[in-house]
Image (spheres, helix red, strand yellow):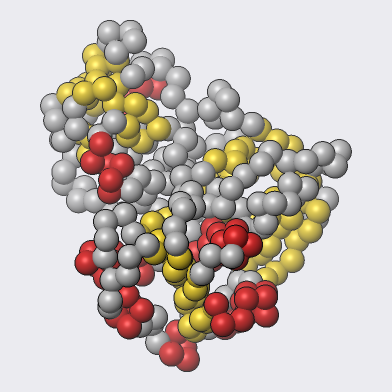
Length: 317
């Protein structure tokens, strides 16, 4: 946990189901005080055990500080975290929460196009609320396997009408990105969250759009060629130590073995907890947090997954 990050003990005030296999939780402070403020795109860590943390996007209204809301899809092929959330957490239980933190912030734009696939609606929903309240123009394309699988579908369609286009795959097939993104538009921010296939297709479609148009949040970091696991060195600027990072070890594991306390949470390059400043060298970015523009700066890296493109990295540690 980051030294300046809050750890909260919250009560589950409500648990219900907002779609097929999607559990919705309302978390409150047991004493009734306001929770730490957050902005659209933020997530929290839910501590399920000493060594089990999962990150979930806040899907409520950022203006309502009396509660945090999350929605969790049961993933049979997952690592067990979602099943534990569904089966073991109940109303009136106390849960440990860390955060919130935001690596998917909403930027200022003249207009917005939101694209969500499945449970990817969760970080998009507060963005919709925020932008709608501002009066700026926006649209949402919301895809899912079927209407019954699409969390918050009724709330979105009844509350925002023609702003929302619901696109169930079993009725219409995949979202027609060619139609929606075929003609580049200036002054538009495109925000998307969903499965990797959707985000990859969006990146291809938005390649002809103005730079910096597309903002995505991934459920997990994109796959990398595991053959490219070269060894390298890290130099720690504050202590003067130089450490070897073998091909089969992560930077954070090497740091922890050397007694260097770097906070880590997801170990998948998605939560942003282990962000570390880079002073020299070129990281091999393997996270799902940084934009392409941020990666090009090469001034930070996420040491749980990223490696090095140069023989040595100098870190601000």
